[in-house]
Image 1 (cartoon, rainbow, N blue to C red):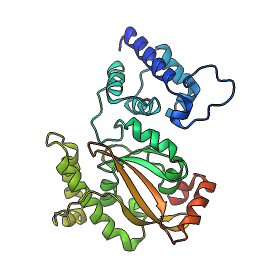
Image 2 (cartoon, rainbow, N blue to C red; image 1 turned 180 degrees about the vertical axis):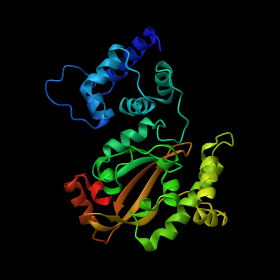
Image 3 (cartoon, rainbow, N blue to C red; image 1 turned 135 degrees about the horizontal axis):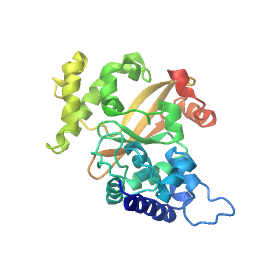
Image 4 (cartoon, one colour; image 1 turned 90 degrees about the vertical axis):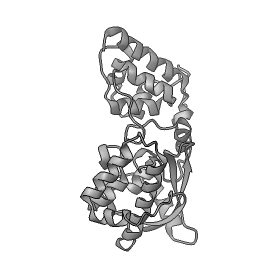
Length: 286
């Protein structure tokens, strides 16, 4: 990437940062704020980068962001789809396909996610790749931000990685697998036939999992909309939750949030989850 493009990348980031208010991304306004938009340290905090690194990006000093960093910047700065693509072009990075871990998250869904601070919530794709989580979702289901490739999909992990099932009681495993396979079939059918991602996942699962092959052969199909499930938390024990979904217009993304099932002790347990916070509970789960 040449110097003019470095400078243009920095200018574009500054312009997008200036238009975002702290409340738009779930940050307190705070006293003595000298700029109307976000500060550099706040963008760094939202993206998981150091302040020094983000400052280099804005100054056009030669730092070349990875695809993962570009995805994090797109989410933090609430970029539209066109703006996300422009950012990737400026960084000389390929525009990521929809559905992967670097997929662009709909800004409206991110805004809703920021406002769901009292309940576990996350944005996932139709292939069950987690794109964004609030702190309570991390505390409930574990941090999924580091997953890449097919392994970023819960459907793929469910049939290929036994640890992916630890969150669910053993007696619920068969039903959960059938629901995931039926949801995958619906997603694969809805996608454009020129999109190879879902087809590649199905092909890999058929080759790697006899269990998946058996379930897939039954041809069940159903989008997973609202559901009731049981989860096993390493500290709080068994939780009974209702899973609610809000779908994007094209059906490729959904905002998923968990509420306690009425009449169960999960009501009090989820309140305790908020008190516990994340507290490295994922280490206990592992």
